Image (cartoon, rainbow, N blue to C red):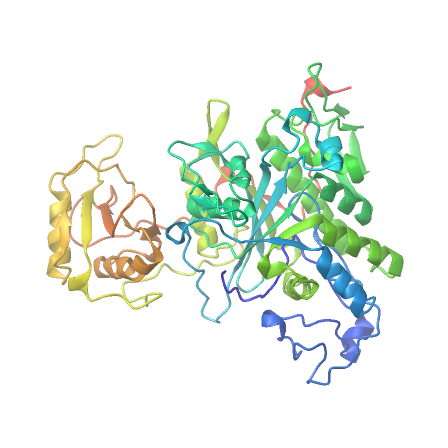
Length: 549
């Protein structure tokens, strides 16, 4: 599993956990709160300076939303036995069920040694219990394979100054990777054609959804957190309600029985319990009645919860704290790196540093393929920005692209030992490929010592920008060496299971000459990502007139 700069964090679309001013002044922390479980002045044993002082103060908590609702970021301090009881509530599963060759490269630290954190938030539609069946309906699917109907990637910047959330519509068509069920060893082969993204969860568990995301985005995922129908309801009840807004009276119900059943009056309503679940599941009634509109409503809900929690008074009731702790720890399934209260606590101190106005919610840019969707070119721009740790709100100055002198992530072989296949991808929508281009660049590499570079004269798929692809992590450094030799930016090196070795595709941005000129880098969040800022209090869902009552 990735070694992020925060160990054992729990995802939450938002953070939250703080001490009272008195506790801060007295130095009586409640749990190790920094990276690696021992930073921030703790010794990792429950005290400061190795004193191991017992904590008798009541912990003051705030909670945060993830996936569909909320995730606990701390614990109610009711003693060691209760602490162990809460730990026992937490369910865990393997992080990644895919093959090593399909996994994204580890996230690199910035100049200060800080590492971004990527957490996949999953909402399962499992009808595996009577309660989930009652809430989810669809009796014909009881006990069947669960679907990952909500998938959101939470990216926390290396310096913890901002967060970005990217939703992928459940109807997205993807090639799903090979996954192996850790419980029974069943192998699900990589799909030959495309399937809906939400089917990944039924191929061995949440670790297959993680593997699918890494293959799609090239983003290394550090943790996941999953919640089901009953978990959403229990957490929403424990929280006490989240304000949501609609611009007309809405009733999500059709004569054919479709719809979430959500019924709200125009304006703002505080929803909780089953009504909160209905809001998060509503498709028929919001905007164009698609999964894209549902994702927007989920973003609004989570943003509202962020504001509500940060503005609310600190919790002081032990019974309230216990209720929240019980609901949260029973609601979630996490990877093995998040399977204790302490690990959950550790993230809180990091996340509380992110201002609400630096949290950005987006949806993967997509286009329709029949009634489904697929990623667009803008989606790759969004994924690259996250890989490069560029803030989606545009308030950070992006780091310059790596130059030819950049240091590789690992030691590369000598150029003469690196085999490189060179393809001609210089064709565009209006121009044919430049003849002989693969040979020209293969000769250029040979002159730089890459004597095993060969031109492949078979037709190549047109590439808008020059790219160096490699199939597995052990060849990453060699691919980077090829890119540096040609003066290509670091972003031109991409992992891909579509190639069997290092493959250079000369793109339409390099149709002539032997000196590569990098195109201007786009570090602006695409408009098609429909970004929403968490501090925007004007958000209100538009109601489809056909569902107004």
